[in-house]
Length: 289
Image 1 (cartoon, rainbow, N blue to C red):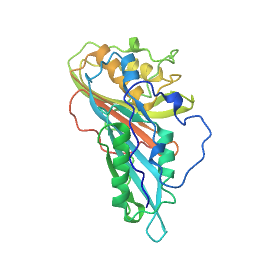
Image 2: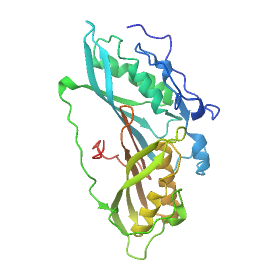
Image 3: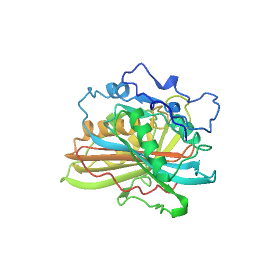
Image 4: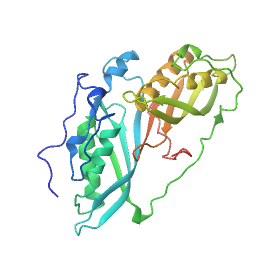
C-alpha cells in the first residue's frame, strides 16, 4: 500500500470552519487511501459561546464513534469488512467533521492492507493527527463475529410526562431543581433532536443525564431536551451545551451527560462529558442505532 509523506495536519485556530468542509457539497468519492480527506474543526469557537476559556475545560470526556461501513482489500485483493470503534478525547483541539470521516473510510475500499492491525494503526495515526490528540481505535473484522449490544439506560425515562411545550431553541432558563434531599439518579429521553450546523439535516438521539445533587425538575428537564428541536449544532457541541446549562442552572455536585445519536453515512456519534474523571458508559447501542 502506498502511503502519503505525512498524515493530515490539524488546524489550531478558528479560521477553519464547518462552512469550508465537504458538508452539503457534491464530492467525488475516492476509493484509494486518502488521509487528506479528513477535515478537523477547532472546538474552541463553540466553546467560546459557552463561556469556556481556552485551556480551562470544566469537564472530562470523549466522543465515541462507531463505524459500520469499513472495508479494505487484503494482500490478495479480497475484501475485508469490519466494524470500527473510535474514541476522540474531549480535550483534543479539534473534532472531526463526520462527512469527511465517511469519505476517508471510503478511501480504504480499493486499498490493500496486510491486516486489520495495520488498518487500525493507520486510522489511529491519521485521526490523532487530525484531532490534535491521541485517538483510540479498535477495528474488528466481521469474520471474528464481534458482539453488538443494544439496551436501554438503567434510569428513569422522561418521555411519558404530560407536558405543554412551546420552545424549540435551547433555553437553559427552563431548567430548575425541586426542594428535597440530595439524590443520585439517571434521567433520559429519546426526544432529543437537533440539526446539522451546516446542512440543517435532522440529527436524532437519546440524551442521558446522570447526576448527584438537588432533585432536577423532570418536567423542566424534558422541556429543555425538546428545546433543541430546531437548534443547529454538531453532536459534540450540543452535549457540551447541555452539560454547561445543567451545571450552571442546577449546580449538581456530580454530573455526567451523554447522547447516542442515530447513525448517518455509516457512522454514529456518542459524545460523553462528565464533571470528573468518570469512566464513560459501555458502548451499548441505543435501540435506533
